[in-house]
Figure 1 (cartoon, rainbow, N blue to C red):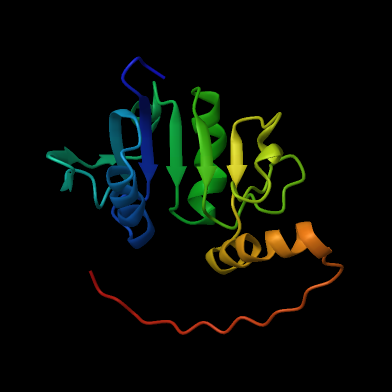
Figure 2 (cartoon, rainbow, N blue to C red; figure 1 turned 90 degrees about the vertical axis):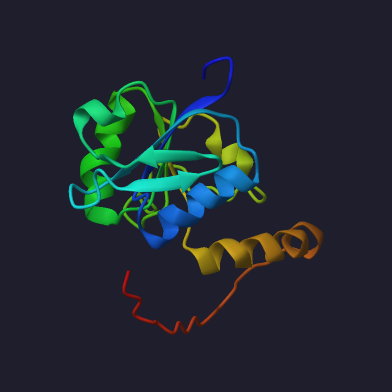
Amino acid sequence: MTGDGYRVGVVGATGLVGTRILELLAARSFPVAELRPLASARSAGKLIEWGDASLTVQELAEDSIDGLDLVLSSAGGKISAEWTPRIVEAGATVVDNTSYWRMHDDVPLVVSEVNPEALDGHRGIIANPNCSTMQMVVALKPLFDEAGIERLGSVLRKMFKTAKR
């Protein structure tokens, strides 16, 4: 972190989730000293608006990950499997939004409102559960704390809509 904030990369910056991550970083005034939108070669060179700035999307590559403090990643499991270890090796902490790291024993699965202590001792990769699970456990945490929960069953039905960009 620099004196002005974090040097942040967003992997998958031009996708639906990456776009929302960028919106939330701006809306919540996250302390960003430098923001690097990272994506595929196909998206490299596109301009995106972030706050009052226009940023050029960079291709996810060795030179584009150097010097970052924090990377928020949502570009799919295959990309995460390949790039997350490289990003960590380059010095950043990665918060991964894909399913790839969720079941790795050495990677904490964290919902900040529920188990922030799971971050203790992380080794550069932090996973989070899928969106429906994350919302559910936040709602269930007070019930668990008050009465305990021994078992929970749920069925999730998702409707998918194809969106063309």
